Length: 335
Ligand SMILES: [Zn+2]
Image: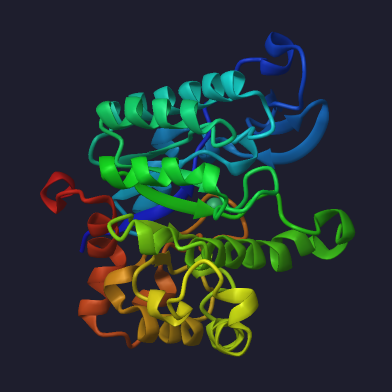
């Protein structure tokens, strides 16, 4: 059975010293360690230690083979978005990351699919880069759940989504720069509490801002199974019904209507929650995702689904067909 992981992260091993080049900012760079790992440094401060499977394409393919997974959809690590940089510098960072992915996909067309990065802080340049990578064959992009703390419902981002719909570029929304992280430094709370909330923040912004209503052909996938959006849809719908003066000011459509319009990945670590998500979304809108190679991800690549009692049609959708449909790619290219 074809297995495609639609949510994984990769980084080029050689990153330019953008802080030096641009003369400001905490751009990410890598410091190699003797054990072949590397430290991701953010303006001289340690951010995260990563291993070779974060950059080495062949090691990744062999690790995926252990779980009979042939294809990886790869995108950058959100800390590299650099939305805080100037638009011009953000464009340069995006182009570098995108060219790396385009080259990777050219080398391994049956194993890798790339999702691009665009400088969301400058909508005009973001659309320019979107058009460039579309021409070069990329099927979609990854964006953050907020853009420098501004929500995706802000009118200035609408032309970007409009361009995505026009070009047929899929959009994956990834939590990053988690709300409240300054106030919750202990216990890994930004990852455990902030990330699910961030994804719901993005989903609610797109729904209540009417973005999906105005762009019905836009194909959006929410990572981490939609975060807290789907588990709290009852509360969100109730809020819409009881306080339309606060909630329904830009879009009169009930938020529950949008279940099954978004795609989501299956990263739940909980088969019962996944079954609920399948019930409300339909399996054609649930994709295999892992967040590989990071430890909070599903590094057994869908094993909990293979071991479940889900119908084989649902498993086939999750493992391949939903992702191919989201990205509008032909299955034959990966068999
Ligand atoms: Zn991720």
